Amino acid sequence: MSDDLAVRQPLRLRADSSRVITKLFVPGHPEVQRGRQVSEAVTHVLDLAEERVAAGLAELQSRFGPRHRNLSATFEHNADRLANRLPEGAVMSDQRRMLLGATFTHEYSVEAAALCNPSVVAAPVQTGPAGSLDLVLSTRGIGEGHRSSIGFRTASVDGDGQITVEAPGPYATVGTVSSGTLHADAFRSVARRASDDAEATTWVLDSLGDEFTQFELDDRLTELEGQGDTRPDVARTVRRLRALAARGYRVEFDASTPVDERVLYPVADAERNGIEDARFVRFEDTDSAVYYATYTAYDGRDIVQQLLETVDFSTFDASPLQGPAAQNKGLALFPRRIGGHFAALSRHNGTSNAVAFTDDIRHWPTATRLAGRTKLWSSIQVGNCGSPIETEAGWLMLTHGVGPMRTYSIGACLLDLDDPTRVIGELAEPLLSPGPDEQDGYVPNVVYSCGVVRHGPRLVIPYGIGDASIGFATADLDAILARMDRV
Image (cartoon, rainbow, N blue to C red; front, side, top):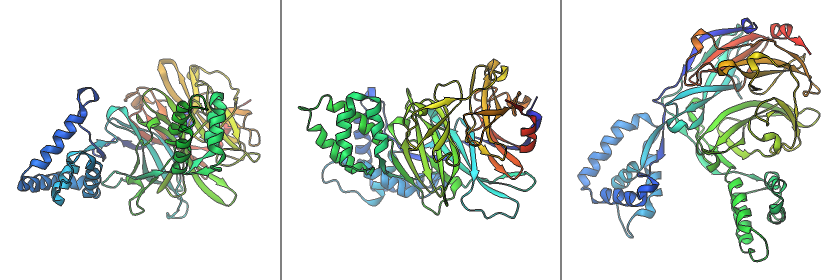
């Protein structure tokens, strides 16, 4: 066995159901006249005596105020969203308006069900003592309805490999969402995928340039809608392009909020049922560094892959990933260009690992399958555990494998530095497999990671346990490389 190479630490992160965010609450069910319920609730708030309004609002502030940062601002925002349901000329006191907003607000526990599938990168700013490395840990929180979001923790590892994770702040906070910059190359991929859209898509893009805003695209699509008499299936093309545009957005957090308070909650329709398994990487390009993360967006039926970009974990830009090599799950970027090209690990066929190259980070046309020996512990399925780590010997790639009893284990292989489509070494046995105290969980018999980091001679490995909690291990790089069978 190879799992003696990994040294587990007693540290565990577990789901905390008290980490709640606020969301707009629209009562009722689509099949039972939701609109009437909203109108009746608005009327009830408008008919309350002023003293009942004051008492009700005071009680709500007392109960829920300590659980949220600036709850009053949330009530005001949600009252604004209900303005179109008010009778014409309605006048309300500030307190009644706040109560109206509270009536249409609810709490959502981002970790109600589980906390799992972490990724880790070196923090943008290092403030720890010499020999230590400050880290940003991303997590997958699973809440009500099995909807996933991305959370963060701040952590560090010292010179002896001891990992510390700071307790998160008292609040969970979502950022302000706005339209992001849209990229023409992503839209051209629609034309590549559906030739019957090609002419109309090209017409839309010709006047927009390489980057454009949502408003500029909307104006152009409105023009296209007026050409239904001369172009075939204009409505379908507009629908496809609008859906793609909705996947591009920006989330900004107030710089005063701690990183471990920030939650990236689903925004686009394509991710309304969850954003899953973010694989973060610190990407070095010339003299600058940027953090990218690829993640799976799930709408309840289909999955697509998205790209996050940030330099400070305060502002995040989301955009769609396109192309055959970006299908399925688990795209993981290399931390630098190779031969002048972006490179990524891909699992586009759903069962095996591959490597893809591109000049456009948002479009991945082809992938080369990685060769490897079939092993019992990974005989059903293999994938990656995040971005590869550059070593002097090659690219160290942690893998996940699924074997008998649907057991997920973590393995490792070595890819050639200049040609990462070549596997030059691999562990015969798992680096980590579920231990006796790691078999139970939301999904039993799973250890799984979405990204690791190197600190000197060690690999720092955060990993999900049973899709329910997060554990940590370290491993000596030289020992891993020495144990590998050369291919």
